[in-house]
Image (cartoon, rainbow, N blue to C red; front, side, top):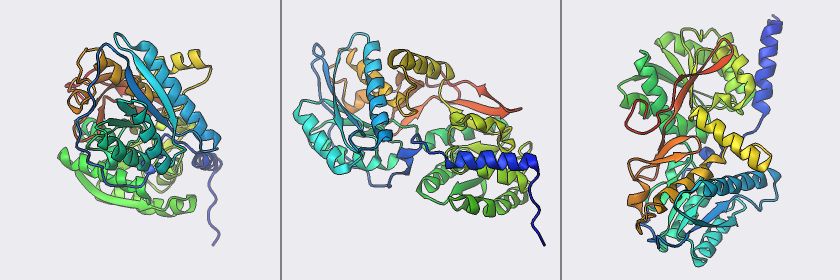
Length: 400
């Protein structure tokens, strides 16, 4: 028997999903690094002279010979310098070093930076490089604020600035719980990022008192997603899942997964998707029926827009999605230095409970090297993205 061809509207939706699958994005990059043990350094961090500029080393992924990473490196440096212009009562001396996304070169650059007088290191991007830099910096009692979101390398003298899966899942599970959603099925791509995301979601659900009613994985390719979707939809319907929590992103398999699940009988009106990644990263996302009524997290929309507009006005181009975390690193260093405390760069100061005001909202560093960011919750209804709960302005309030 011939297989039934999809209708024209279905075909257009599938084509849109397939085009999105073909895109690439580095906003998800740091989560896909190898999981490696934390360096577990023992030093507390450098003391500073409050009357002198803070010596900051910025490690960026330039020097690979690839235009994409040169763009990221430039965007990170631009954002750091934008933050320097906003400092009030503090002065930063910034030196920039290229790591070429190579752990060995990152280690060498960290050694050079410390010899040049660096009192704190901002970057590098990749988790493996962050681990290597952390080892070098630990011996010199220098703290590292890496751009990775991989908590496997956090701890000791290494802090990660990237938005972690656990922080996102905590926020979304907490919000969903207040709406009566406590039964979750987890659907994840069969790769390292998917596995890390799966575990973060499961931890958040169980910690909140909710239930993981099932876990389904799928191959990270178009054919594999189409093939797995009926089983995932069937499992969600059979287990009474109130939502399907996904780990994939808009540049990966999420558009095809969302479309295929709807075609396989999952009703987003009664069993919406919840996403661990930013759905607004692709404008076409709002048009996908499978994402309607779903939930995802994002930063403070007002602060994000202000940062983006200021960056564009200053540099004549849009910032890379990762650029804001370089701004955050300088903002934190500057805020601490402005206190006039010679211990401003020690672990105790870096992990202050009040946190800092970042480019996309409030954030703070935790003693375990991870971070917490104040996030908004967004949804898609009638093909429009809207905020259903704003990001808290500070910590200690709902959603924090």
